Length: 382
Image 1 (cartoon, rainbow, N blue to C red):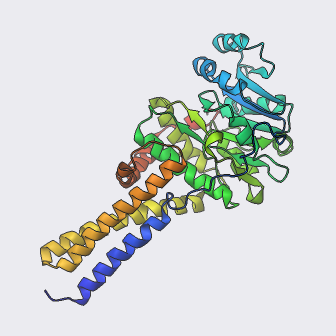
Image 2 (image 1 turned 45 degrees about the vertical axis):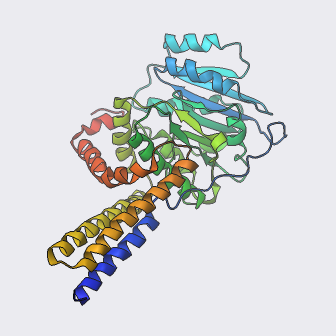
């Protein structure tokens, strides 16, 4: 078999793509674990903190998860503030059952509020009700996995920091691609925050200083948008050096598997929210680079295999086969490391296939958003 310039050129391009594409994967550039929460619970490093839990028709979830927040081992004063809708009798009953706990406080939103996001209003009311300088915000369907959660998370709250991003993973009942998407999003946003370029939240738990939120007019400028409450907090208040991450297993929250409607809404509202965030286009470009390069590598590898088979060019065909196997193995190994860091039990050897098909899922959500009624994403219906 004659070795030609074309054979060498095709082989080198395919192998180069295979070598470079894993380097832009979010699983290659993982966020670092925090090591500043290793102090024992009995140490005097804890600081007063308020935890705001938003409950909107989530009485069953609140009843299940609230005890885990109230029973935290913490060496300083803390309060748990539940914000619910006025006249939500089921949530009110849950709160009454725990009313004897000195850490619990509840406040209710008036039903008459219009033209503003009710969830952002709930967070604002919760922050105003907080009696401590730092406020951790989360949802009723999230819960701590240990009684050291608050200690671990709060160890990252200090005077030089204004916003802290946390992490919540789905429970074991969630489908594998739910875990995959959640980890990819968290890996990108946590690492961005650690690199002093925070863009959006990593999940449904964010901490912010009460005074900064109030002095910075809170959600002013985005109150007409239905969702994006965590992303807007990070994007508006978490710029540059003032952002930290609470990324260590004892600081993780576990989130109930989203039901189908919530999973769909999360994607559609995320698309709408992203368009309003500062730095959106650059962030989107960088995020798409991984998928584009990875799939370009696969296409080039398969193309080289087909070309080599037709032309009986075994060098090109071998390069294509090697590139395809190499990228799969490297992505699987990177995924294994990522699953371990994010405390996820998804089989790493199926992760490459989810990564290969993610662009099609993203396209599907984009199409659904394109044809959706845009009034569904705002509070003031025209």
